[in-house]
Image (cartoon, rainbow, N blue to C red; front, side, top):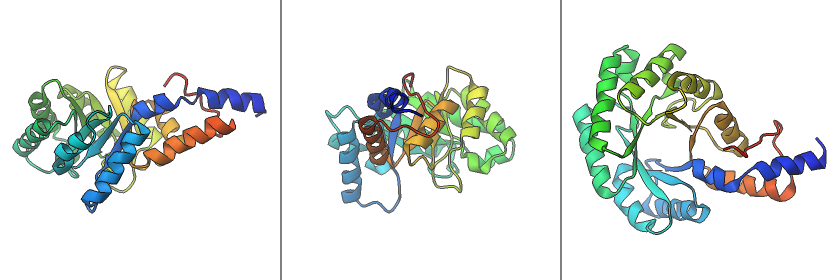
Length: 248
């Protein structure tokens, strides 16, 4: 590709658009408060859309990020979705009281593997009802599911009122794949969000997920990705696929 084409492509990589895609994940169980604070400050410095923190860190994150424009989300029933519906509802209500603006709940994976989609839907519906106007994303944990189960789980999440379906917690083997994103997008249609999470550690992977249909990206590599954006724009470099992010 000639230099002019490279320049056109790099100019189309919109740093602000990429920032608006990113939920910066701060979920590893071993993170100390000092490490959490460093990542919160990094998220604020890079002006990402939001952070997704452990439930016990929500109140602290809200206070630390006040005035930055970075939202604070959290996880419910994390990481395996095996807590009871009542426990998920209680966890949701506490997260909302602490200031969470979005909830990423893990579907009942055992119910999904049992084909008990009514139970999955009821579980989602209870959290959605508790959340009120707050966005609820449902983590399917696609690494554990067949393609048919991904489709059924996506349908159950939408039937339960979820605003997004999401690939992974990041704690199962395998993370987001473009194939699963495409399958989820085809299943839920254009009006439901699709979040790619798990293994998104570079700009090209992020772009691949967006092209497959993702509208939000969960990653702990936000700084690296945004540094890649800045480098690509500054140097006129482009990805091997010649991605055009002007519409993202």
